[in-house]
Image (cartoon, rainbow, N blue to C red; front, side, top):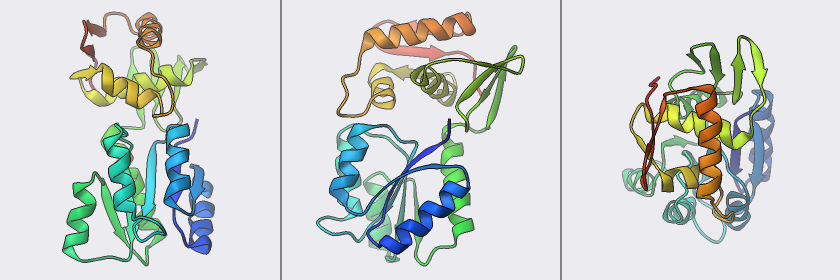
Length: 219
């Protein structure tokens, strides 16, 4: 499974240029030309990364990200903007941005920044636990080089556990990571997903009752 990016850029030609470039690099793209469509897409499904322009019709990219953060959406976000003043830079990070890239952008630099932001979630693209290998970019688990069929949410939960590096992952964080805002999160489903992971990785997951879980293997 490829990394999913939601792109918001109101310049149609530049939007298409970014789509073509990132899809050629193996990313899965959804795109929008305005913040309202972006908000709908973000509520309908989960993404691994947001790429947001700042100067937009109706409201700014800053305002949009603030709404998403206030709703519990923690998706990593890179702003792409023509603004270069320190106040705008400070504002962007204060509403929850992970990085900031000034137009006109170099596409190779954009790619490097995307990879850097994603690496902050998981520091390596391939993690080995016993006989299992987890490919974080492809979101695939292998047992002795044979692919293991797992539901997407189970793999997403495993990657979240690995990114936690042995700290407690709270239930609210799991819910916001596995379900979009428009979906109903289920603690019962979380228990099922955890049980599936425990079969693969015995004695690695500790249930902190009423709080969350701790995955004791660290990357």
